[in-house]
Structures are given as C-alpha cells and as structure tokens.
Length: 174
Image 1: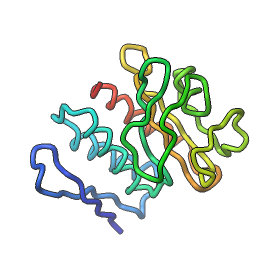
Image 2: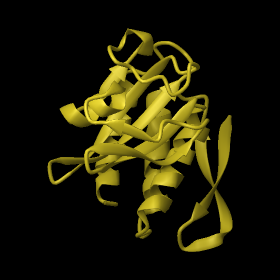
Image 3: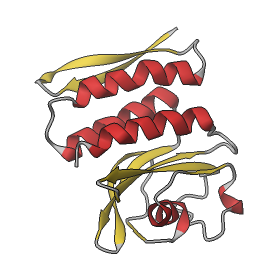
Image 4: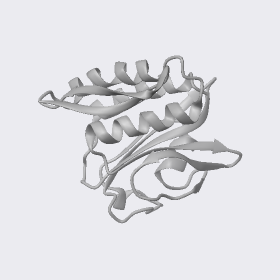
C-alpha cells in the first residue's frame, strides 16, 4: 500500500503534490523513500520556517508520530519552532529535559520511556517515548528536532540513523 501525503512544492506554491511512501516496507526502507522526497521538497527553498514546517509535517504524516517539531536555539534557550501535534512547551533551558540535554550534549538522545529520563519536561502526559536530534551548523547546535510517541519504546536505531541524516540536510537551511 502506498501512503499519499499532499505537500506544497516550493516552486509551485499553489499546486499540491504528494509524498509516496510504501507502508508495506519496514521503517528503515520507508525512511529511505521519504528522505529524498523531503530533500527535493526543500531544495531551492530559502525560507527556514517553510523547510522546517514541511519537514515536521512530512514526518508526522508519514509515520503517525504523536508530536514532531523543532526547537531553535535563541540565546540561552530553545524556542518552539514549526511543529505538528498538540500544543507544546514554548521555551526550554539548556540542559533541561530531553531537548535541552540533547542541545547541551550536542548528541542524539533516544528515550524509550520518558518517565525514566531524569528531569523530563512533560509538555503532554500522552508522550511516552522520545527522540531528539540536534542540528549542527559549524560545530554548534542551532536547533533540535524533537519527535514524541504515545507508545513506549517506539524509536530505534533506524529512526536515529535516518533522522540524523535528515538533520545534516537541515543544517544547510540555517
């Protein structure tokens, strides 16, 4: 079965297109289909917000994650950026929660059970597991991608590898 997701193409703002994702494939193969489509969607689009928003929407719709979004480094805080899902925490201090810890440590954090993460910030009690991937530009974290699931242990190394690859692409948008 192919999942068709309407998207906006950067050079044709009034014409909807679709992402093609074969949902019969395993997750790693679905990411291999999705990432080049996100790259094509964002290539040539100079607007950071547009690229982050479309990336969050594509990940949210393709995998049905509970929450997908970006937090942008602004001074000594992460500030909420484009996202898909329920309302979220607006500001997160460096080193606080999963997002702030990923920023402080400049590394991906994969959390199978958020209740077991010391200092977890519960923006939603429905969030059960989480992966946070930093966006590195010139060796500095400029943003983090935060993906939450309402299922325990929903993220694995396939998610980590694909999302890290995607955030390498995203670094070019900053």
